[in-house]
Image (cartoon, rainbow, N blue to C red; front, top):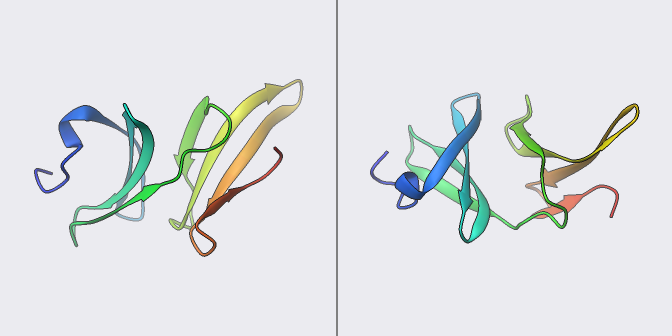
Length: 89
């Protein structure tokens, strides 16, 4: 993974359909990395601090669980088509 410049300063937090979801703590950012094609994309930071982040079965979406509720969680979804997070503010 030497082609990904933040590999040593990031943590792999999930994988789906051959893609890896990295999290860099400084500056805080998510990165989607395809080890096969060596392509990568940085995601804008979600507005709320993520407690748990995963790639969904559609690898174009990243789910961030931002707040635990009595029956579930507040969820932010990164929509790669729009290039933005959506969900409750």
